[in-house]
Image (cartoon, rainbow, N blue to C red; front, side, top):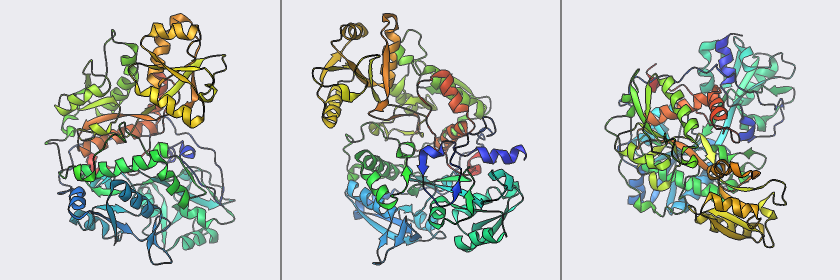
Length: 575
């Protein structure tokens, strides 16, 4: 098997077992296969922004504000996502999700039937303002649509006969493979036809599986959720997915205000537990890790804007930052301290963030200059005034979403508990009856958070405000404080700043009480540049570079799973 074919085996998300698990009838090997570390080529350098592509001329927010309704185009023939039930009503997982979004936003949802052939025209013409029904967020589709956060992850999987000699997807090069005509599986295989796969089209999944059973083809590619319902004896699944297909709500390209309104609702439904309940109602035997799919921005519930307060404009930068991404050019990046005299907390992430950006710049063929003394969200201003093309290490916040756009997360931190080793305090539940938990003075809200968690766990603990590292050492050594509740990065800084005291600290890694993403900030609604940033992070994950950088420059905990979009995105790269 040549290197080109191997590439398609290993560019699949190797932690897919963490993301989704579906019990099915096909015999299968459930051991995940790690990707080869260097087989994914660098992200192609774009040659021009996509100014000639269709973009939104008006926001769906205007329709909602004028009519009080969001018109959502839906394919009615994709159960259990969208279908007509026995009562003649439109039903399904995505219908339930959209209705929940409507309740959360205080608006009505009107479903309009579309087809695969008409949906793009229906959206661009304004007949509908959003699309659902197995809308796959792919690199190719980004030339027409913007997408909400994904809320389901399907997979294209290869089925072979149980006694087949094939163990890897790439081994079927040159062999006949069946797919259902017009399905996402056909589109996924179209991307691989050039690599020698003999794709045979069938009208239905039954026909495609029958062809495999009769020996007309050596493999069949289909969507995992459909295959799990069709499960056949005498067949098994190839371990590596052919492709991952994240489902999301599609809106017109550049309709940033509607996208933000939908994303805020989806995040709130996830944070409240409502989304999990909806998912389990429709997929009771599946286990989907929404933490991989959905970032949760800061100030999620304090952003009190109603739908009437969202802007209806279509803001676009005069020039995409892609114009600066030219071979040999130096780009400016904010978000690092670059100050050896700064506190350890302020420069904690400098090596990690610097290495991430330098690798992205290497793949783009540009040089990079870091603007010093701009750690964390102080970097926003440099994006707004054009002094920087992007800001690294940013915590996405909802009161910043009208100023910048955020990439997908590339790291996660959150509130955790730190205690002394070899004490009875090994969990939040151990804090009861006279115990005391401290918090850092710069985060006074942590006192309320401690009390909320304690009440939920039915434990009783007092709180104490720490104002210096010396005070932390004193209180822990004399055992008047038994635990410290703070963000992961603050705890790591405290460990570093107090290391000469000899205190044996232990962060309780099993207990995390929030998930705060780190992202890259880019100019608002510069969708071409945001796509390039996201795709580069994804490619770095797929070839293992991201994981190597994380472990070499930071090393605490595990690198996260970076969800990837299928497709090549050649429309953006000009290749």
